[in-house]
Length: 152
Image (cartoon, rainbow, N blue to C red; front, side, top):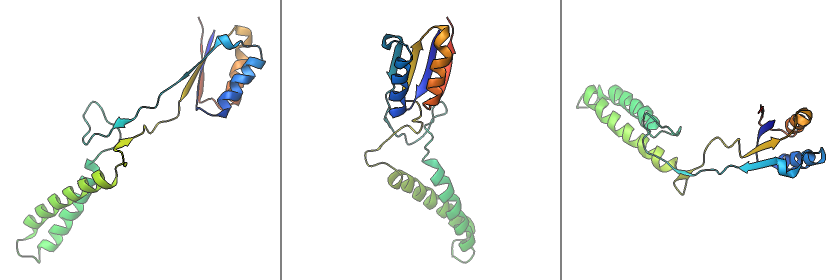
């Protein structure tokens, strides 16, 4: 029987491994796989198939709407009228929002880390049915993110 558990890389993982060895599960029966954190370049536009959760168009839409509204309001007293000033405000606000998101919201190196950093180490433990409950309780006690069984 296999027990699979996910951990953050911390001292709790080391404590869990030490306690599993003390309870009679051999070191050769425990497999720990650290996961690499991938740094990826930030894309200016998201596609329909892939989104990184960071969009440069949100600020453009908000600022464009605000400046379009201001252009419409003040266009009644300005020379070119509300429609033309609304269009000018929209394009100015959209450009301003895009520029703010692009230059102010970026990391110095232009890279960002993945937001979900929960699972960093995966443990796979091969043990008999008699030690399954002990191993699961040890893993849960040491703050495993998730624990599952695989019966073979």
